[in-house]
Length: 350
Image 1 (cartoon, one colour):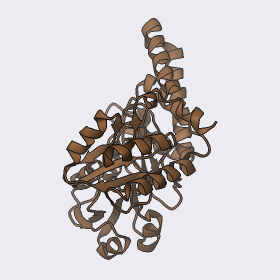
Image 2 (cartoon, helix red, strand yellow; image 1 turned 180 degrees about the vertical axis):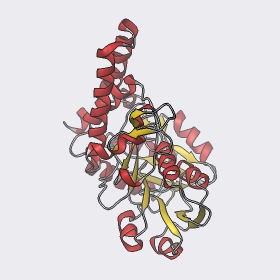
Image 3 (cartoon, rainbow, N blue to C red; image 1 turned 30 degrees about the horizontal axis):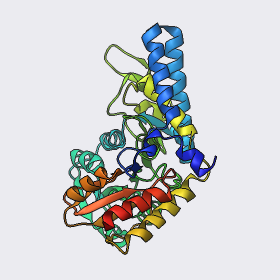
Image 4 (tube, helix red, strand yellow; image 1 turned 180 degrees about the horizontal axis):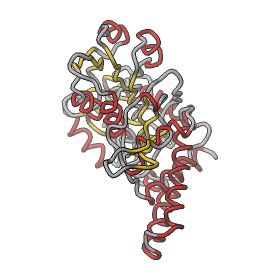
């Protein structure tokens, strides 16, 4: 597949310079067709019977395997979720932390991680998003590091595996801005959340949680998928592996779309995205103050980000502002081309 052929998968790119995968990735035509085909089948034949449920369970199995393969995890370590926030809540509830325990996080985390961290009941220690500051914040009471692998604000990468090794403290990694954008490996990590609708370009409300050792995390929020047998009291035999943490039903049409989306990216996806992000920084640096970062998110400062974002949208360019930060954020994917970036830089310069 050539870059031009890959780009042709996404009809929205015919009209827009779509540079906002950090929020929602573009939808490819085959993904939309898979969703529609499943909905058409349900419209015509209903949602019942052995064949329907076998197809649904088969799609869950395929999605689990495909998501795991992205990060080097076997399918038995993958729970299917609706978002990275789902995954964070599952982990924080299952760890059963108390007021004497501490969680170390950073000042640049998304609320999808920070909300569950706060709700855990543990003492939250907030450090600068710098490896040395994170290490300095760890104490004998620290029970968890809760960190993004790629900061959603600037695209800066945190060395999550090295921090896990140096502290010996379990780490919950928010992978919303990393999985699908850069190479990610679960080795040495305890928990990793995955967003389906961002860099993986899947349907809304899809994602995963990878749990390195499912037996060590309590099922604090059981769903029907959590069990293989249960008593009238509600006690249950947990499903094997991380499937016990599945928070509930994922629409079958969404599963069909997700499985299709995961099959589309070319082998050169990461190299292409990194090159486009580097080119984006190169074009922007003479025009604006670009914030240092190393992944596929490029952020720059502006006096009035909402107004600039609206101006760019009028010119057919989709980026976003990050409220309260003074930043505009650009997302560069494997579908991004030189025309997208030149169009954006010209609109900013003008």
